[in-house]
Image 1: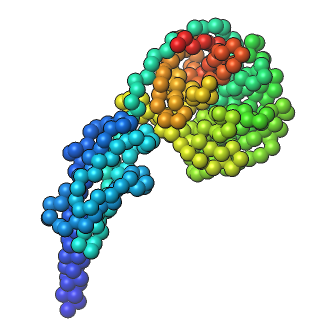
Image 2 (image 1 turned 90 degrees about the horizontal axis):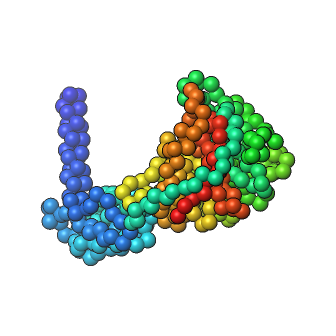
Image 3 (image 1 turned 45 degrees about the vertical axis):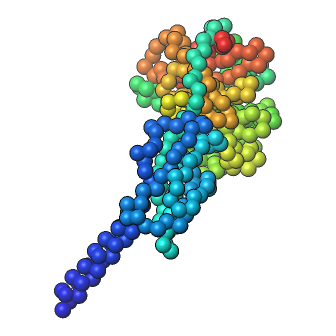
Amino acid sequence: MKKYNLLTIISLLVIGTGCEGDKKNLFSIDESQFKALYHPGDEIPIIITNKNEKNIDSVSFFSNEKRIGSTKGNNTFKYILNEAKLGYQNLKAIVYYEGDVQELTSRVELVSKEEPKLLKYQLIATYPHDLKAYTQGLEFYKGFLYEGTGNGSGVSTGQKGISSLRKTDYKTGKVIQKIELPESIFGEGITFLNNKIYQLTWLNNEGYVYDANTFKKEKTFQYFKKMEGWGLTTDGKNFYMTDSSERISIINPNTFKEVDHINVYTNSTKVPAINELEWINGKIYANVYQKDAIVIINPVSGAVESVIDLSELKTKVTQHPDLDVLNGIAYNSSNKTLFVTGKNWDKIFEIKIIE
C-alpha cells in the first residue's frame, strides 16, 4: 500500500510537471528574426510564435524592465532603438491569453553606430617616474602630479608595492607628499572635486576623501553596491566610476549613489575592463586594462569615438621583470597635453593629441 501511494505521488508529480512544461512552451519569441548586432535607430521586429493557436488577447512588451508598448491580439511589435542605452537589451513579452498569462524573454545587443577614429599623438617630453609605483590613478592639479598607487604584485617577481596617495614634482619625479594605506587595502583610482581628493579601493567596497592640501583623511564612503573599484573621474558635478566591466557608473558625489550609467561600446563590440579615467573637454579618456591604448568615450552614449595607440611608449621605458601595463592619464589644461604612464614604469610621458 505504501509503495502504491509513493508511486501514485511520483506519477502525479511527473504528470503535473509535464502539464506545467506544456503550458510554459505554448509561446516563444521568434529569435530567427533577430540580427547579431543592432545599432541606434534600428528596428527590432518582435514576433510571438503561437504553435498551439491559442486565443491571444494582448501582449505587453518591455526592454530592460521598461515598458515599450503593447499589441492587441498577436500582431508583430516593432521596437525602434532610439533611446536605448548601448549594451544588452533584455526583452520581455507578457502574453495574455484565454484568462491566463505567460512571460517570455530574449536578448539582443545594441552597439555604437560610429566606427572609432584612430588618433595620433606627439611626444612632448619625458620625465622620471617611481619604478615601484603601481599606478592606479593619475591627476594634474595646480602644477603637480597626484598619483594613487596599489599594492599589486610585479608580473614576474611577485613583489608587492604599497598602496599610497602621493604628490610629485613631475619634472624631477621627486615625491613631495605621501601617505600609505594599510597592507589590506589595494588603492585604486583618484580624482579631485572641490579641493578634495577621492580615492577608490579595489575590493574593500569603500573609498576615502582627503583634504587636498594636507592629505588628512576626512571621510570613508561606501560603494552603492558590492563591486570592484577601478577608475574614477568627475565632470565637476558627478563622479564616473569603473568596476572592471564595460559599465561606467555615474555617481552623486554627496551620497555616492548611482544616478545613471553608460556601457562602453564600439560599432562592433563592448569594451570591458575600462580602467583609469580622465575627464577632458566633455569627453572621458580611459585606459583599458591589458591594452596599450586610450579610448575616448562619449559620456552620454558610451560610444567609443576615438582610439590612441600608445604601444610604442612601453618600448621607451626600462624593461624589467615587474614591468606592467599602461595605466594613468592626467590632463594639463594650460598646455592641452596629457601625462601618461604605466604600472611600474620608470617614466611619465607628456603627449599632445593630434586630431
